[in-house]
Length: 265
Image (cartoon, rainbow, N blue to C red; front, side, top):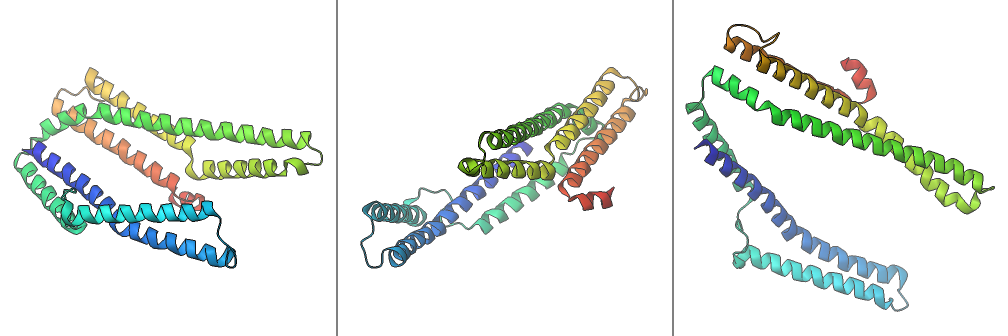
């Protein structure tokens, strides 16, 4: 029963996403059509008021307008009478209400089937391997992002010196130097703001710590060597949740400006 509620909730979430896209298309396509026509008229007035517009530009505006008209007609047909969309005529607000009711029914059903604390703690231990895998994957992602940024920074910095030395004066390669300098500035700023190296280190550290405690409780070694299994499971769940809370706190600190991080610390 609980599985069916989860499926219903996931289905409603997907329907809400689809309906938002449909609504965006219904209202966005006519707006884009009006903007295209206005851009064509404005271009004619500003650039070619006393002459003919070039044929490629006229063809581009005309083709864009026809495509947007066709898209608007198809979308309105699907919305009004085509029965192509599952939720045609249904507002996102109604779907959100259905989702809230489904989540409430899921909570009520879950309360009626709540397992004992010892069973929940035991199942919590079994759910940790995917969490460790997720932390490691995110750590690898930020580590690769950091390496990519650093290599781009190294190459751009070296290229600036090489181009400057090759062209003296550097007027023929001024555009290249401007682009390389812009790249160096953007990468340096992005590295300092997003801090992918620190994020990768924190994620890897949390994953290793959780895995260490999972191995300890599996082998029954300290600090999970108490005679009562319930006591070990309770201590394990408390410890791991504390680690995950610390990880979230570190992520929040990395998202704050440097001055805000100093105040938090």
